[in-house]
Length: 199
Image 1 (cartoon, one colour):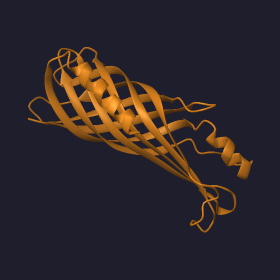
Image 2 (tube, one colour):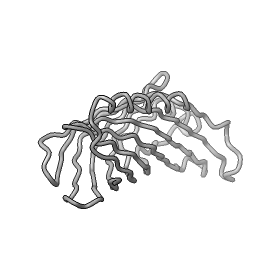
Image 3 (cartoon, one colour):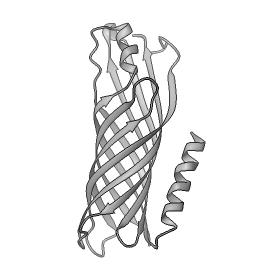
C-alpha cells in the first residue's frame, strides 16, 4: 500500500511539473457507489447462503488535494473510504470496505468563468477488505480477507466556482476497474464535493 501511494504521488508531481501551477485547493467529497461487482467475493458469500442477493451499493466519503495548471488541465489526489454492511441468512453479516488513494487528471471542456465541464482519467491503489461475522457479531466466520490492488478510472463532470469566491463545488460520474484476481472488481460512483482554494 505504501509503495502504491508513493507511486501515485510521484506520478502526480511529475505530471504537474510540466505545467505552470495556477492554484491549490483542499476539499471534501462524498459519493454513492452503485453497480458494484465485487469479483469473487460474491462466490464466498453464496457458499454460506446460496440464496443471498449481494447488495451492489455503498456509501463513500473522502478528502482531496487539487492542483490547478495552465491552460486546460487540472489534477487531484484523493483518499476515499467506502463501506457496506449486509445481512445474510440467520443474521450473519457481511462487512465490505474499500480504502482508496487515487490520482486523476482532468481536461477542461469549454471552460467558463463560473462553470467548467471536464473529462478525466486516473489511477488508484485500492485496499479491499471483507469479513463475514456470526449473529453474535464478535466471532468472524473466517479471518478477514484483505488485498491491495491497482485500478483505473474514467470520469466526466463539472465544477462550479463563482468568481472571487474561495469555495468551489463539483459533481462527477466515475467508472472504476480494479485488477483483482480471477474476476475484476468494477463499480460506478456518483460524486459531489467542495474545494477550498488556498491563497
